[in-house]
Image (cartoon, rainbow, N blue to C red):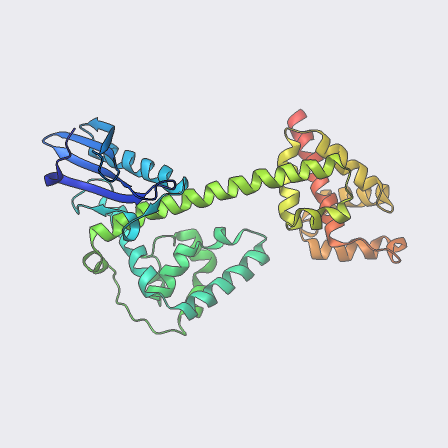
Length: 348
């Protein structure tokens, strides 16, 4: 099959991980009403090797196929040979106008955000997440912080023009965010419709697809790390390693380890048996469990605040003064009680 570049829609050129001399490219082209997604491998002094990955009448499907192929190649170690690795025809029918506009805001905010303001916003998010006992991204994504640091809205009407600011976020954090933003100059004008002209469709589409590829790569890395952590935890349980040494042995934070133990317990009962054995080795284990169970039923707010709970525990069980519980021990017992409660909920 010969490639017709007269109606080229998409082109991504890269070097395969094991190929030191040749190169490959992914092409989407159109011939009348037919769309083609093709992978062409070029070796020196050799005719190109061509694979047709898609042929049909759906242009969006053709581009999505190209995107999937490119993602697989990059995850396998291929290296793009041009910036972003991809070029697009500006009329490519992939994204709705609303999405395209949002991506243009993201592109502009990446290039024009105020680094000092972004750092302050991240610090605010970290404190707010700790206060609310939530993951920071649930308070505000990095993407939203970039938008805030680039466009600096100074009132609620401007604030709600940014993607990621819905009514709930406006109610919870609007006043605090505006108080922070008031200390910085607003270099861009609202409304932001001018961004649609400032950033091209090509830039927006390239940003969106490369963002997806990077996100997929990060997800793959996280899954691999999670599998390695799970295996390390099961190995440590099999060797009956004490919880006091558990954290240092797996080089991970206690909260993350305990979350993985909760997940592993769903398919591996030896996790709960290990936790029960460890708790029985703690001083005054029966009194500890009784006290925490009672507190969980009567004062859930204190039970969910580790710092307050640890202080109250060591004060109310006076015979622990000589050997008070540590934070990691307390979190371990609380995680065990959560597992027990979950099991009881499923059984009922």
